[in-house]
Image (cartoon, rainbow, N blue to C red; front, top):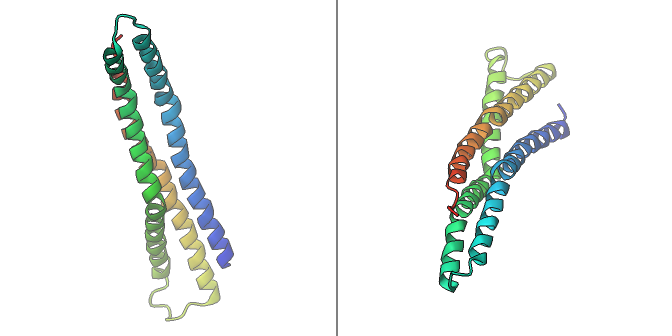
Length: 166
């Protein structure tokens, strides 16, 4: 198989992986963060509108309003930083592991046949490796990333329930 084809396939797999992470962030934003920010701003407005509060009380009230949304933003930002910092090496590491395991599996089919593979056998090994790697990456996209989404969404749900009192 042409090395360019393999490289293009690797890029496509990486893009699918990155898109899955982007979709998770979008889900957190639309399902949780925007509503929490709206509540935060409404709460802060009430603090500022309260003419009985002095400056320190207004500031204290605003800090109270801010706690759930700040915790939610920190949670999501922490996950994003972890994904961004580790995304490249995490994807590369998982991808390399997939390639290595899949390549060994494909080569093992020809063990004992001969020390050198024919061109047809090499092409078969490359194709089987590519199919296997695709399945491996798909496993990450369909299982590992959604598991992280569920965990963070559950934590955001709890934070959203901690609405500031009026």
